[in-house]
Structure formats: structure tokens, C-alpha cells
Image 1 (cartoon, rainbow, N blue to C red):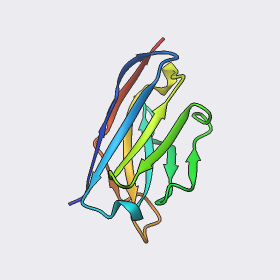
Image 2 (cartoon, one colour):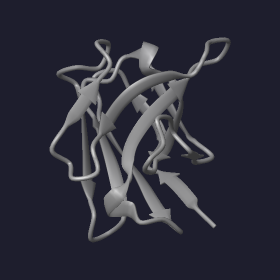
Image 3 (cartoon, rainbow, N blue to C red):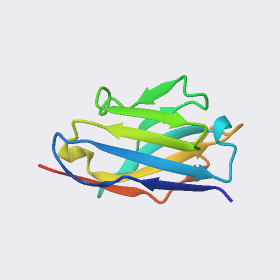
Length: 119
């Protein structure tokens, strides 16, 4: 059974930082591409950042480029999202997702962690 468990969310002031973690189990993590998505109240879920299975390719939404950094530790089966210079518009529930081969989409999702940025 695949499980993705996010942690690290919370309340932070604008300009602050948070680091999200997503611990994966039940899958061959080193073969899975991973992603972070977010969903703000009243809005659709949107892509934030993605990382290839090896960590060699990184992808970011334009809204977070230069502020957020995705990384992974395949020895720990964990993917991270370092979020700096946070803005109130970053407030959302953040979800971790895994894309396992040969899938073209994300197959598995975590339960999400709340990030709230106050102005």
C-alpha cells in the first residue's frame, strides 16, 4: 500500500520560510517522479514543483520560481519543498504526489498539509 505523508506546514508571516517534507512508503521511491501541488480555498489544485526520479530534472510553476526549491533524498524515501519569501497568496493546502512508471500522470497523493501565510 502506497503512502505519502506530508509534514512541515504551518502559519508563517509574509517573507518567512517553511520546509515541507513528504515521506513515501510502499513504492520504489527511486523510480518515481515526485511533485508538489497546492489548492487554495475556492480554487483548483495547481502544480507547484516537480522532480525526476533521479533528481536531475526540476520543474517549477512560474509563480514560485526563484522562491521555492524541490529536492529529494532517495535514501530516505523523502521529497522536500523549501519555500522562501512566502507570500499571502501561497496560502493553500500543499499535496505531495508520486508518478510511478510507466504512468503519465500522478498515481498517488498525500493527504496534504496546510500552509498559511499572514500579511
